[in-house]
Length: 542
Image (cartoon, rainbow, N blue to C red; front, side, top):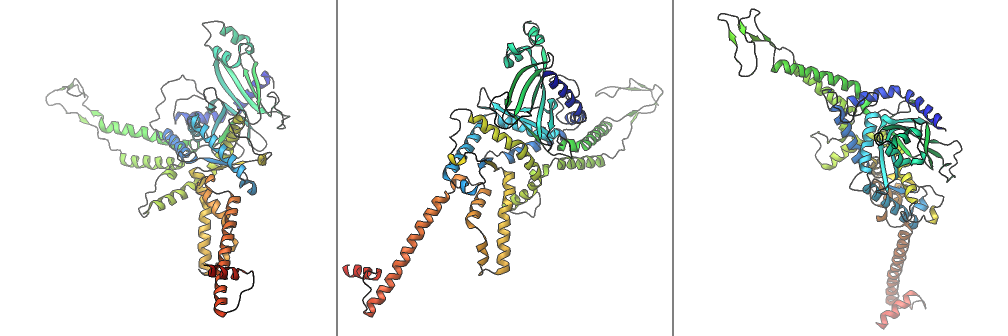
């Protein structure tokens, strides 16, 4: 695409997002209230008072809850695996997957991932859509960026997967020279760059990434890779940088999606009508409280009071015999208004799923195990949300991280021969993922209990239907047991073989001793060369 074509497409994408932009601005006004999407403003500008903070607080609380349950700090958030069972138990493959998993977590912790991730989750909750990007860093190996959705415009393929991202951003002439090089800049930016008074003037740029028509996954030249990455100066209508990426470089996640909408929908968007109503109700309550604390003064209209003042320690003079002033009595029912505000606040918080992260107040629950079990049951309500986050955000993000690290000498261990040409996948170990995986373990326990009740304790033939080895390894996985704590299958089978042979020898020895004793008592000589003869000879020698 040429610079003019990219600028024209950007205008089309901006126009197509108009309704979402207006809705997002309201979500911002009733939420954090510091960013501008369709309105004009400056950094640090005071926000409009909406008389409530439940919108912003709920955004932060849900994002923090998702963060802690998806990316825990006390154990790994994910592990790499292969679906082929034989390969999965291969020691070389298992060691490589485990080592790469450790390396990825190390870089995530040492980088700015945590800051970018929490901001990205807040974007998902507030605008229903978030855009996260990882690149080779300058000060650190990996650098993560969460882009403000007000500047992001997307397009989707035939399957409604986001495959195109355009982004508006401003650069001063000095910043443009640093990123793109003086030789790539247009005349307007160069003119400002050479003028010390205009060096910090801002110019509008467009970032565009989209799939190339001839993409086949084999091109290694940046100008022919599967995804184009182009920077355009809108003021000069000039491409200032062109490159490419073997994979889609932006991770666009959607909290929820309705029908054929390319942008997502988040709790803030869904709860906006109630938040507006709450704002109006709290404004009314403030008026009620003002009328109660400082009611209207009713005074005679005859000039008998002078000067009329209600300030503390003030003095009013009254004509003898004149009518006394009195406070106008407020008869509004503020308690009913408070109840309505509390009920509406709870409904809004429920819309943000905040109840899923709270400890149940049911006094019939006695033990910590019961509390955890109740919490797990509630968290299953987040299953579709977590699934979308994993498929749209984490899966492509992790694969992009591996690709970036693979280009750095020594950053990753060498790929074992067994994995050449083999696809590997991601298994999640965060609390939410483990809650879902625990369904398998719970299902086994319930099944075993029902079968025992049906066939009785003594009849255990039904257990032949179960693969005990697979069950034990999968249950360990479901309970977040590290993969390297489990023995290699070949080693396990070898130890079983050695143990079986030792047990067989012991049984033969015990049987031979019994036969030898019987032969000795009966006076019959044992067969020459038999184990019984050896035992008898050993006993006589002793």
